[in-house]
Length: 140
Image (tube, rainbow, N blue to C red):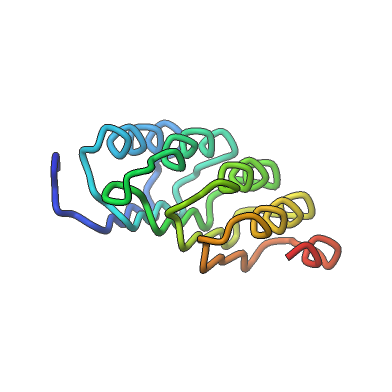
């Protein structure tokens, strides 16, 4: 797939986990793919799997940068979503983020709200099927 014109990749419902996601991120960072839309939903990616995404958020070339990321139905948990939110404060390319059913709760809701106050690039955020309560929802 090196230098592939591939623009979308759907790897949903596999078993990538953090290790597999890390390998994918390496391919993106090395410039081997120009994939803009990546679906890794339902892949058993937990909190630690969010850390490799930091490298994706640092890609500055719009030709190689990810614009759509779906992490839905992965057990990221509250802390995983908080870490992801921190990574997205300075995001300049991602416009859609799917976080449906990832175990986000109060702290994640607050962190996402804070991120949205600084991130003017993100246009679509799906946080359905989580446990974000009214107090955290006010931060949105």
